[in-house]
Length: 511
Image 1: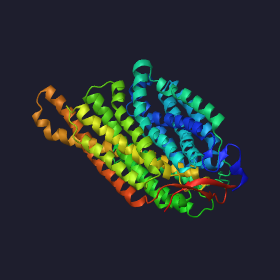
Image 2: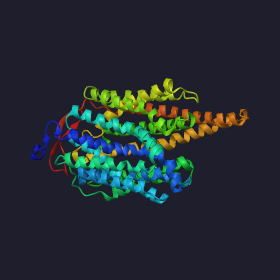
Image 3: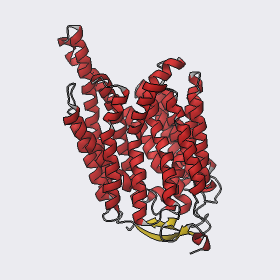
Image 4: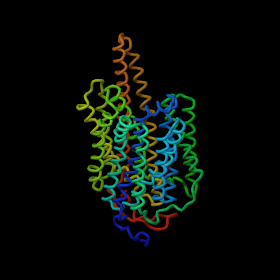
């Protein structure tokens, strides 16, 4: 092994000496990014009113972020590989904090949209850099399992924590604090990372940047995310929606063609061609499709149907967060080095599907304790158990020079899955709601009866969409059982190959 690996602060067996301290600040940065995906949703009605944003334009508060984040993730991952993950991580943190401050200070709709787009740009640099730092710093199988267990719990449960924090800040302070709160997060994470993160030598990718790949992947992903976002607001038959999907298919096919022919591709096809990683990206994306829609439906159900305040709604999600933390750090972490990954991912998705199946029984008068609580616990346990090995295996076995782009693929599957899930399940819910209302409106004569029918139609729409999500989770479980054939993780030394300078110990999976 090269001398670079034996530099002070590194051990051949376990990785960087400061790895556990580094994990604290990497996890904090990841929490900030995940929180932001839900915390702003809680604040949106207040921000819309203050800034005079029209109903037609309010979606851009969410869409501007999703387009920039989802479209630039692959580029951000490759920049982290080339530029250095520590440098990319710190730059992403500082940029995200400044963009958040700009959002908090926004005085108009366009200023808010611009701030959200900037958050997405820096988030696309920060997220893959954070995950790939874990991949190269934790090289011992057992320690890696613990580290990714913590990371997986934050990635899974952070969205629900965002609902609680967003509710508190909006209700007791001001919506602007849902943006300002990112600044102290970023400052602490950046200062800590500066002191303790030392990236292993030899993991840089020295190849020239694949400009055609960057352009094609960014435009293709932006078109895909925007297509699904527009489908939600304007319908699937809308001319612009259809043209976005067509453009996305053409651009992404051209991207694959280019990547198969250039010497230094943005996304080396070897990263996604691996059976385990391909299965993980696909099953994770499908699971996120189901989960994203569910968060939205349950938030509306609790607030509109049950009359919960934003803060109470956030606390109602705590059992799901507790389940995710337990599933990830206790079940997943303890079993990952003992059983095959598919025996955690497949059953995990099925347990989460069982929780969703319970939620198809939702009615206006459903009890939180007897129905929602057990469903949320099952959802959390299942997702936490499945996410943990998925996060770890998605970056295992990759050459160090590809760690950033492999990490970016995890985030891309989540972002695209989230966009698809929100649009697809919302459309199903809206269609079922309209159909139910038309079928029963004849019996609703008085105003109270019509109001009751409105709520019944809404709940019927939610349960119809949730039933569809159960099927999606079933497919995710099937893919995990079929494609993810990795054995118990081991830790061996793998040459980093062309474009990297030395050999670095990275975990690989047994086939």
